Image 1 (cartoon, rainbow, N blue to C red):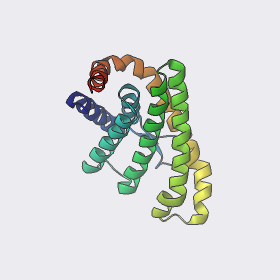
Image 2 (cartoon, one colour):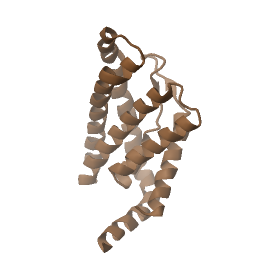
Image 3 (cartoon, rainbow, N blue to C red):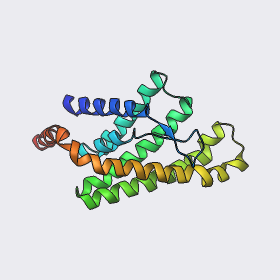
Length: 187
């Protein structure tokens, strides 16, 4: 990984952190489930540079968020945010990398939303919600009424933003991506 690629990943992580500050509750969900578009930079990195770049952007965003105290849900919330964002970026990035077309982008983002929803349902059921002290008999109703619909909605909206923005910003990343491909070809 070149210095320029690491710089782009860091810049996208910083953009993700900034976007986290603009979170807001959605009227049909509990107050603690808030929407922000902070995964868009991770998805852009996953599409332009590769799936692991998307994961690194999400990791950087969450570590920075925790370090500066922008984590109202604490370590559990940051962990949940990372699991969701990394799953979305990795799955979408892998699928998009196989054939970089608009229709593949839609498929990649859709699969990313589904994968994120499934992974978060499992993570919340077995691990995250019990860590919050939520009784086991209340976990399943909470998942079906709030968490699964929220992840589907948030992922779909984030995917839509990514789809619209990616082609507009990928030109800023392409010279770096081309250099990465040339470096691999030389080896």
